[in-house]
Image 1 (spheres, rainbow, N blue to C red):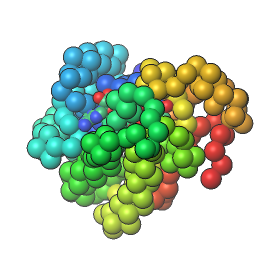
Image 2 (image 1 turned 180 degrees about the vertical axis):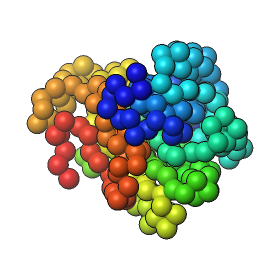
Image 3 (image 1 turned 135 degrees about the vertical axis):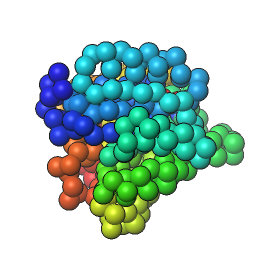
Image 4 (image 1 turned 90 degrees about the vertical axis):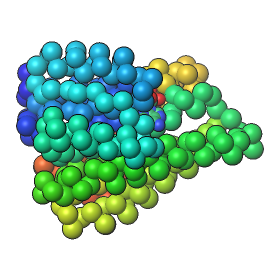
Length: 262
Ligand SMILES: NC(=O)c1ccc[n+]([C@@H]2O[C@H](COP(=O)([O-])OP(=O)(O)OC[C@H]3O[C@@H](n4cnc5c(N)ncnc54)[C@H](O)[C@@H]3O)[C@@H](O)[C@H]2O)c1
């Protein structure tokens, strides 16, 4: 079981994944556990039932053990509990996947002239400040363990400037900048920081925000010409979180089937 997805390098490692209750986060948790990693899966308190059930199901499947912790990425106190749990349950943190974001929670698309300051602040606070708070909480534990891997989930919208959610687009562009800054500042601690920028994934969140025609049009615009599934992201995320990506840092890898070439 532990080597079925070809990422056996993760056996015995501990990974923290945020946004584990969302459309894509659970796939990362399952893939890390299948590769043998123990996982601290986190999401907001409202996702506790989903997250706990996910942790039990994945742990029962064999491979690594998954523990769910309810934690808001914008709370330093919550990050303290996540770090404490990782230490007490598994003794270390080798990798962090910053996947949590307000995406489905955007609710719908709006012209930038209609966005309120509160909407702007909420999205930037969760998507950017929360990512920084996660790095700030976890980096000292990685440093103690001799290094680590941080993977920030961005989006191709940061490059395309997709209309309808300027605050979200700006937040993902800021995440890309944070990835580069953190890579420079943490490199001396043998911590790499990279990003993965997914294209439009055909998950529940995307179906809330986009019409079926829009999703089909995105698929046609790709070199590979098909819709994208959460599983399409797993290989890039697991590799950037693994020992073998150790000389890659400050990069954001686009995973979108060849839609955006920048
Ligand atoms: N689905 C796509 O097409 C797509 C494309 C590009 C990038 N992404 C990115 O991939 C990631 C996952 O996307 P998804 O489709 O699963 O989105 P989603 O909205 O289904 O999941 C996001 C998760 O983040 C959690 N979250 C929100 N605010 C939080 C907070 N303050 N603290 C902790 N957790 C919080 C939510 O509860 C949810 O479980 C996000 O970073 C998103 O921006 C998604």
